[in-house]
Length: 271
Image (cartoon, rainbow, N blue to C red; front, side, top):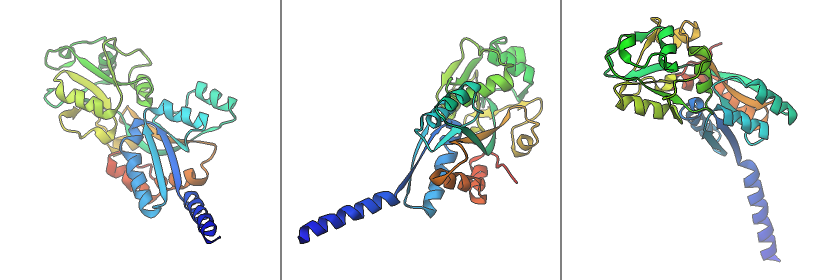
């Protein structure tokens, strides 16, 4: 009898422990999920040690799909949901609801040895669409341009086409990479390389950020929208945030969370 009571007590204890341990599942954008959200999660856990996180940064499309399929509490996205995604969500009685959590800018980066200091928007479009294929055509040292982009599941890939390329196709030889760090690594070792990265990666070694029409990406130019490739970034939830997801959204939007946004190199939303 004593043994059975002990076993029952242990089962009850384990059940209570399991119930008290929360896991927040977050999927989506590399722009948010590679640096910012892990740091937010660590700060959140300091105050809520019982909370666990599962964070997968594989592109904005995967985050929105995860919310539609009910596989995540929060979907990270560096772009707004597409009409096709909204329709797919509606078919499953899911309401894709965005919350702006930070502002970002896509910085045009070249190798640190490049003599270029800036480009015009028109020149950027010609470079990434392949209309211009040699740096000498835009004021650089002669050399065949090597283009590095994000992959097609990335919100940044889509935003760049929208903001920088008049929705035209990328140059045929453009190399698609999984994340910002991969683009930085390739441009840093290729004297003729060019790519775009989020602000959190703009100060990485081996690269140089170019001014666009005289504007460098920085907090002031992003907030004023004078830098042309500025954009908001989002958490998506099914309807308004609730439960454990809401707790983390609220933390991200708090003064402590937004201070982390600035520390990472992105731009806090301000009030």
